[in-house]
Image (cartoon, rainbow, N blue to C red; front, top):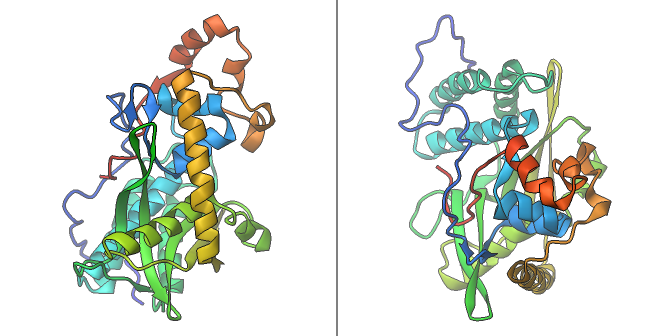
Length: 330
């Protein structure tokens, strides 16, 4: 494997349209809602509602998000961009050495846009992580699945009719990073970065997982309708541990049986019906048990304010942008 040396190597141009920085979004009409009720759902919106209906209301219905993107989120977005670029280049026939040079250059550019304040998520960490990851999995035995049209199953956006509720067609949506064949079975690949050790406890956090279960379910539904993708047997979680001056990697299979998929479909339909009914009634009950999750909810201080003053504090503290599951990534 030949590493890219920026002092001696000629830099190949990046693919046209390669994003530099983060699209922070803006507030616009959300086409996944009808009269204030969401009808197109993805893992983020489902998870938010199940975690806390009021947080879901503030974040997705009203569109309030922090003015500054947290470092872990920014780093994760950039890392996914690098993986996406790598697979697009390699699957299009670009030699791996050339693809590595382009991705390394892109990592340096993206790293310049990372917010400060996190010593484990810096420009140096981003460059090191993608280079070391590709070194470890240079001859990866997980082979990208080809769609029915022959294109690689990478960065696959789906929006599938899932159920009907009160005459409204309800869709499930999502974005599958990559679908692969490994040891004769098909798996959804998902990249997860963390500061914590990549032990059994870390991987056990992905079963149950709303996101993983949704993606595996989507593959089954697509296989049964258009045959564009094969049914998935589960997920491959590529864990990425980040630290000061080191990056570590581990991979684990998260299996999902057909019985589990069918049970998940029933549970998901019930959850979406409950959320749509509550939204129609304008009732978003807070879940106080979630207020201190992950160092505290973003809206914890807002919820402590008198109800009549919360909107003022929301507008003064947050910005508004639209999360639309129907909109593919750009």
